Length: 257
Image 1 (cartoon, rainbow, N blue to C red):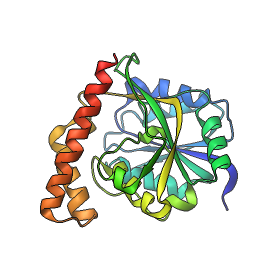
Image 2 (tube, rainbow, N blue to C red):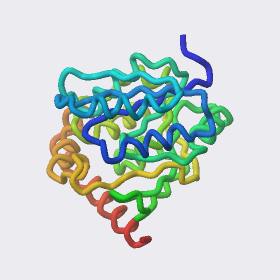
Image 3 (cartoon, rainbow, N blue to C red):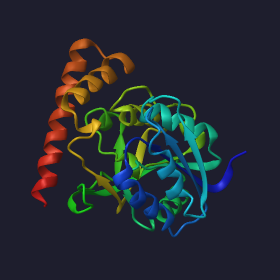
């Protein structure tokens, strides 16, 4: 049985030793304390397990550590975390991102007041050294039609009802797995509402998997063609459109620096 107003925070971990301590500190600093942290260690190389254990054991919040036998990717790792979670709500955080101390408090209050099952927020963009280099303001409401054109939803800003997300798990895509899930979920709830507050710090790393252009383009095509069953030509069009909006957002973000 799910614990009412309890939040399960899901964090896949793969070679994030340089950032992990700061991420966990930002979660520990939350003004809302009714949560658990579920970390999925997703790396065939087990050399950082003791470091992860040392960091999380410094804090008193409820915690679970799942160790994958082999690397399966962030999406499938999150699915494992969701399965063992006890929260009425699921919040996602990447192991190198940071949260504003009132993130959970604001988001839970917003979802209760609006009677919604999915929410996300504005977010700052930070670099390797946690310096702010930009920001993204998300639309007040996003429809399915808008979402398939461009993804303006930051994964570490999302909080979702477990009753909703257990119907649609993450896919095995290496990138875009979160984008595909949002598209699946929005088909169930019709639109997503956002919180007009900068509650998350998303870290941009040039050498990250999600920054690989070839990987992202390939996964975008698979998303549209294989998972959404769009035609070959329309899938190509959607990939080009998605790439255009991604480039436009990047230009707008860096013009603000």
